[in-house]
Image 1: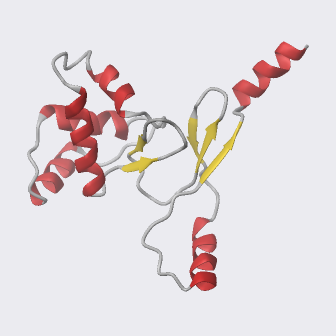
Image 2 (image 1 turned 90 degrees about the vertical axis):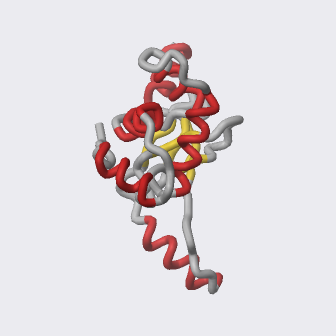
Length: 149
């Protein structure tokens, strides 16, 4: 489990940027900050309904948009119909299982070396980057091997 900013820090940052702080908004961030999964807005909404039965999906989407705009969350496009979200905003690659849809962080890939090479080769000044890999997760590999046996 990884922990993002504390609620007081999130509150201070949102207020500093002119956004309202609501219990629902803090709950959305809290779920993201305490998971290693990369949920979609729909998955977050479903999880939060237990604690906030009147929370709308629109509230989740608006909260995520605000969090992305202030740098608390990053939006991931891993080739699905909807975006995934990650409270770990440090530059790091992701890998998606093409069978079950699981998305994991790739923790040890030296992305700064690759980014530097891209800048040197193209002359661009990078303002951001996202790296995605695709394959079959260990669980799906094992399931496929078991089916073949």
